[in-house]
Length: 164
Ligand SMILES: [Zn+2]
Ligand SMILES: [Zn+2]
Image 1 (spheres, protein in one colour):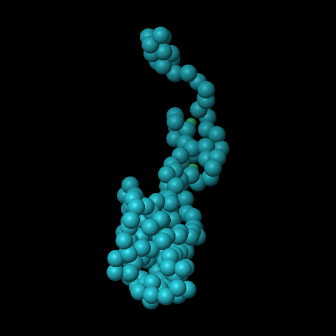
Image 2 (spheres, rainbow, N blue to C red):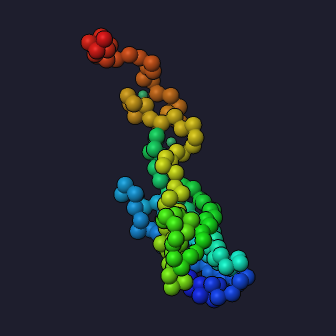
Image 3 (cartoon, rainbow, N blue to C red):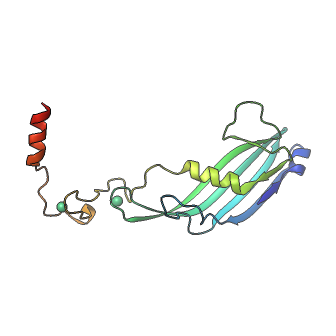
């Protein structure tokens, strides 16, 4: 979606707003498609004494498998990202600044990179997820299994002695 900011650039105090839905369902991570519903985007631009501030309020559902137990984790996020739109980047490239030489911002690309950069590197169904038993594979959040925990594998003991 193109967000034309020519009017906003033209006068101090000018504002512009745009709301739309972005389909990010084609984006995949490890074969999974986390953004299974359209992402709601509210873009708001304002000229503050010549500085063009762009705020993106995004609202989206996200699904992923828990990194420890594999259970599907479904979460809803409401996030807000802020940028400064410039016609020419002067310093080093920075996530904060968006370069728009023709004063038009391609919102899809900005929103996608904001959302993806903001994603946590780990997904857990809950902070204290107990994960799966390494012996029998049971999901330990549903109760303990009958495997003896803390047991030392005799083969590992031999290896340990060899290494010492
Ligand atoms: Zn889990
Ligand atoms: Zn077990």
